[in-house]
Image 1 (cartoon, helix red, strand yellow):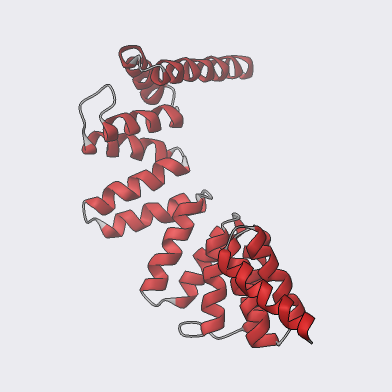
Image 2 (cartoon, helix red, strand yellow):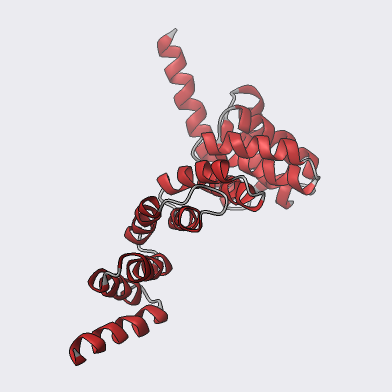
Length: 230
């Protein structure tokens, strides 16, 4: 039984690669029936997702948001994060905010970066600081520099969460370590205003400049010139 299971898993995997090849070459007449079979009969999450994508974009089929939604639901139920995320976007466009957000939760729990970041932004806008922090942190842990930076802003401003400059610095530092130029600039400003640490500020203005942020170059030069004149 185990041998048969492995064989059919391998077979269906190869069939999806074949279907994907047809899709990529725009041979939709061959891609469509194979994807339908794989989605409905072999529980292929990727096949269901690709069918949803085709119907959502009218590729080789008539555009149908409802059909796209059905296939995304099948794929999301099989724990494909992109399907849950796309499903959330469709539901949002239908003003079904409750179920849209539910599917963003599902996508985020499956480590979909944009779903986690999106939830952080939603709760940030709604002034729910704890939930905003939770989802920004998840996205930050998935290496999204902008979410780390937003965490830093929340901690530094202290408007909707308890102010914590240590955690703000930690969040800014991680964002900068992810090579985000603006984050390095913000970290440099933080060292100047909060720590009065001109050396650390100059170093991070330099990183910001090296990463292409022109304001970082300007501030780095100011500190450099000031050190020379002193």
